[in-house]
Length: 163
Image 1 (cartoon, helix red, strand yellow):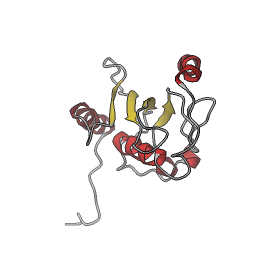
Image 2 (image 1 turned 90 degrees about the horizontal axis):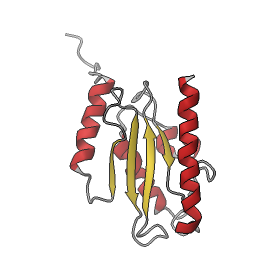
Image 3 (image 1 turned 30 degrees about the vertical axis):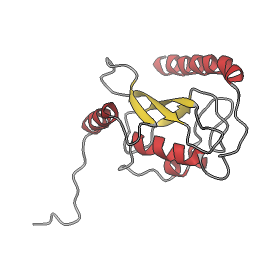
């Protein structure tokens, strides 16, 4: 019948429901997790992720909070990923916390099959890479004011999108 080479494309919301279910069950060793920001968001756009820094790196023992925003073209296009916790990594904009798509291979070479779990796991691996494992990291005190500023920037972005 001509079914060779064809594939079923799972609708966006079904795909996100699958990801939500997987995120709620917990992932692997528990050092990466994610879930929805707002249970009332019927479009399932705003997500929160957590990464516990990998062992034998400057990130060990640190807990990193991230925001993932899945626009209406997800999973055809990658989500926007932003660290809420201040971090020094080669693929992260130091001012905004944005994971720069051009500097992070998974986002640069996005494929529909990739998931938010894949992104968080890949970021954790990136933390342990030779270029990031020993980079100076901001102290808790240095991070405190910056996290509030990043939240405010997110609010500005949402307000602009609504107008």
